[in-house]
Length: 280
Image (cartoon, rainbow, N blue to C red; front, side, top):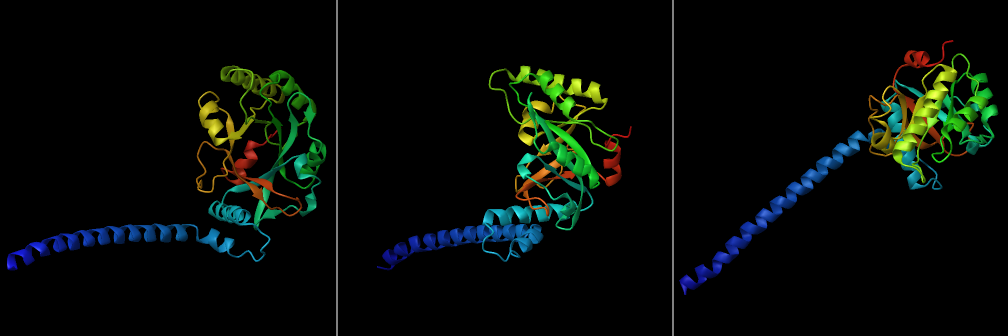
């Protein structure tokens, strides 16, 4: 009888060890999750405090998250220079009200001038003139349509935009692939636009695009150009060395402009930004 009892007791001992192992594994998993969560909370503490500071129930969670990220990045890059961009989609802008975002001074603005071979932004002249009147460093950009003639697009931009001393170089906005030509043909068209505009203004244009497009199609074949990169990913926090400008949000709120606004960080100091402008 004693032998039978001891044999029956053995499985209970193995089960006890197994349970302790499972408990230990669960404990360490919970501990790691807790540590990771604590680190994340500490890292995003300013953004979280900003998030929970909203008083109105009418503000959506998505919008609060976007505003919290903006707040976090503005503070993280407080020694850099901030600007925004506008087009006819912002409607009529009250330029005298525009000054800063979350207490950070706005120094520059990019204004959409043209799109394709035939489109002039309906608010371009007004926005272009007001930007200078209210002492913003201004830049004009062209939205490139891949399936339209590149030189005709360049001529449209040149006929619309007269650059002056203190303005940024021209900007080429390319975001889409062609629906009717190869990628190589598209790149040839982009180079023709850039070279034609360069010869006219005697300054190398800036290229605007999103990070994926930049990495996949432009990074290796358009070396020597300055890039203005769009990336709105919540978890992207680092301004890369090869990005001259980083458009980090499309959901900013700026006094004087109705609706959402794109905001950009310049990867340098105010003095460096000055030397980027036209000095002639």
